[in-house]
Every structure is written in structure tokens, then in C-alpha cells.
Image (cartoon, rainbow, N blue to C red; front, side, top):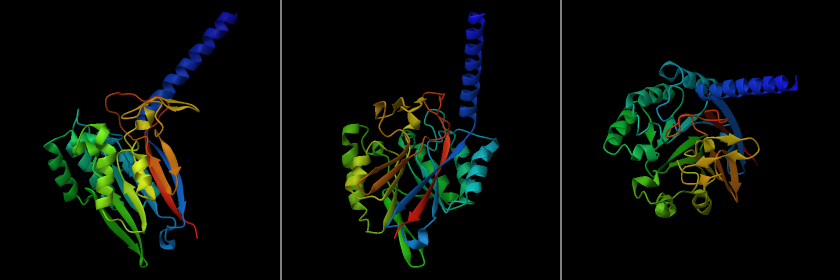
Length: 281
């Protein structure tokens, strides 16, 4: 009798885990963060950024209608696309551009490249031009300003360091150089960068808010422990997902939406991230 009960419990748990995993791979959630600072101008109190990261040519609903619907429901002020919008192993530029075209109709879209865009080689120019054609603002080691009631915040964007050197030994130096060349002002700065593992560079450059991806949430997440593995961080990555703060810099790392080499996520639902700014005076 006890044996049958144990077997029944095991089977129920196995069924639950299987259904949970299927649901967690076929649906997209929304995760919200609030980031407060005395540097956020009062005009930007409540300013919302929707983050789309690591799409990897995934499709949720026909022509990504599920993603579009959920972003629209959040009514963001801008949309940040933080790299790996396509996948270099199964590239579908038109699918990515179609999503971008729909997102631009919701709010201004700012985009930076990830390592998979770099790995497109000559095809990246095609992707970039098509994104520009539908109205996406592509930031290549550049900064732009958004103004409200004579108050300003900066939106900066970094190229993925693989574009300049694939050796990770040089990545921090590359990003530091490009940040310094931007000549950022003291106005509140939101930085779009694919790479979370170089957090120390953002802290050293006094960036206020960093929006990143790349880590895929650690791929397999263990409750109360975190992600198991992330690119360029290895096992048990420090910056796998969520909000991190050091000194005056906050970084929000998206778990991303799609997959690349490993085709399945465990306890790691794809997500659209919403970051809301709070002015603290």
C-alpha cells in the first residue's frame, strides 16, 4: 500500500513538473521592477521602459502577437531591445523586423547588438538597415537625450564587445573605452548593454541604470539558489537575472525570451521586463 502511494505521489509530481516546464517554455511573462533615484527628474517619475532581450528568433503567437499584446498592455514610454534579437544559428531577419515594426507602433524602440548579431557577420548590415527602415533607433556606442518639460534623461547604447574582439580578456577595456568616448553628462543615464558580466565597468563609469540580458536567467533555475549556467560567467553566475545595485548603479538583467544552444528552460519562464523610474527628492 505504501509503495503504491509513493508511486502515485511520484507520478503526480512528474506530471506536474512536466506540465510546469511545458508552460514555462511556451508562454511569456511580465516581470516588473521599480528603480528610484534622486537623479530621476520629476518629469520622468513613473517613466516606464519595456525590455525585450535575447529573442533569438523565438515566436510566441502568430508573428509574435503574444509579445506585442503584453508589451502594449504595459503602456511603456520606450522599448529597449538589448541584443540577440536574432539567432546566428537559425537566423530569420524578417521575423525579427516584423516584431520590431509592431513594437515601434507602441513606443519608441532603442536597440543595441548582442553577440549573435556580431556572429551574423555580413548579414548584420542587412538586419540593421531593415530595423532603421521601420523606425528603430539603433545605438552603436552612442547616446541620445529624451526631454520632458525642459528636463532630460540620457539613453546610451553599447555595441557587444565581441564586435571588436572575441577574447573576453579585452571586453571590460573595450566597453570602458566606448563609455568614456560618449562624454555622458550628469543627467540620469539609462545604458543598454547586452553584457551583465561587465557590471564593474558600468559602476566605475557612474551609470545610473543598466538594462542587460545575455545570461538567459542561468537557463535552469533552482529555487532560492538561482541560475545554473550563463555565457561568459560559467556555473552559478552572479548576474543571472533580476536587479543588482552597487554604489550608485543599478542593473536589471532580463532572463530573455528565446533560447539558443540549449533549447529548453527549466523553472525559467521567458520574460518581458518592465522597469519604472521613481523620482526621489
